[in-house]
Amino acid sequence: MQTLRLYRSTVGKKAVMAVTGVGMLLFVVGHMIGNLSVFSGPAAIDGYARWLREIGVVWPLRFGLLLCVGLHMVAAVQLARRARKARPQGYEHGRRPQSYAARTMRWGGVIITLFVVYHLLDLTAGVANPHGVQGEVYNNLVADFQLWYVVLAYTVAVLALGLHIRHGAWSALQSLGVTAPRGIALVVAGVICAGYLSVPAAVVLGVVS
Amino acid sequence: MKLTLRIWRQSGPTGALVTYPLDDLSPDMSFLEMLDVLNESLVVRGEEPVAFDHDCREGICGMCGLMINGVAHGPEKATTACQLHLRHFSDGDTITVEPWRAKPFPVLRDLVVDRSALDRIVESGGYISVPTGSAPDAHATPVPKESADAAFTSAACIGCGACVAACPNGSAMLFTAAKATHLGSLPQGQPERWSRAQDMVQTHDDLGFGGCTNAGECTPACPKGIPLTTIAQLNRDLLRSHLR
Image (cartoon, rainbow over all chains, first blue to last red; front, side, top):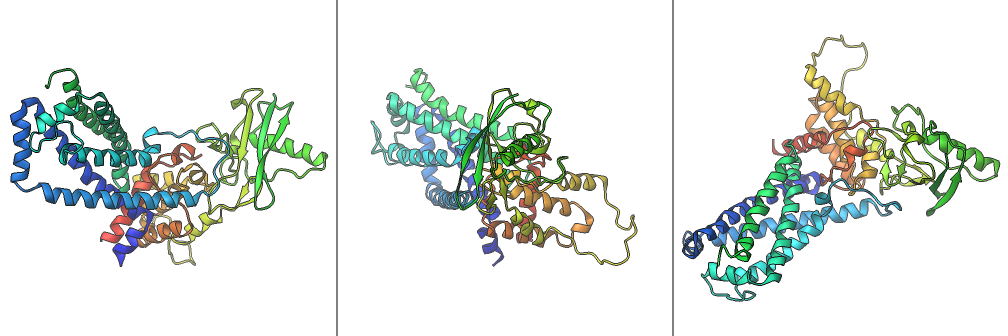
């Protein structure tokens, strides 16, 4: 009963978004560290992918992430609808928002979701990949980043993710009642953008081929 | 100086912006004095004066509240509309003046909105229960200096509603958090601290205010600069009240 009352409140919904957001952020960090093994050559990253399947973390992780994405999106949509209802008539004079990252959270989230769908078809299922051989992670991603439009889509998605984290990481702490300087979120977002973009950059520059 | 005002006029269910050119204004006039001058000229011409809320004109009562060029209380930081002077505008400027916009703040007339929704939030938990009768000894309840300072930072809220007006979600969470943190920081506020957080957030939500998404637009609009940390404090109190 208490839990239901909490979930129904706007503060409770933000707490759900914060907890699921932190869960997804931890995955994003882990995924990034895994990606960086591409710099140790084909054997390292292919072996890392094989190892993940052998220890049996892939499916539990997928279910956990799906749950996080679902809860995060439901709460976000409910809060967005609530916000629209709370101001049926807007201002004639345009507003000057303080933060670009905060303003783009909702559509940024949609962009990230669409990219994740493409990303799964590309590098998990392999159907949208120019090489598309199961287990050949290194060759798949090198084949991907030979194409300028894949590099562009990937870069846009990573930057959208960076903006989302730039507001989201600080916002999550605030929602859970922890007061933290906003700079923390900027550092986290910067590290994640740099880590993820280093892989396509390396392929484009010929460091990884 | 010369200014052109575009003011929201509304006497029924709908309204519109009406343009009023003004000459011979002094840069030392306050924004509300300018509206007084406009109203005098409207009365002379036999037109209905512009309705706007105001009381102390000293920046401490919280009655005035205008959206000036899309910014609550206008461009000056930590300043109410009544303390905003025309010297902060340039000769020849066009200024748009609108009422606060939120579903729980219905427009009564022109620039006046009904903010009693904020009173409903206070009624639901913004109080402490004490025996009345003889006055308590002044030193009966010692208050640590840090607690007194924290309480006062929040108590500076004048309930003008600028946080709601500025919030992209139409949330009154900064107001609610200021009231809850004000009392929650003091020893006298402890017995009802957990029910206060629950009841005030519940009332806030029931009234139709939006949820706080930490956009951070409220504090820069707040004439008293109530910090966002009060919202974190209320979030913490609410979560703790449910998880205890």
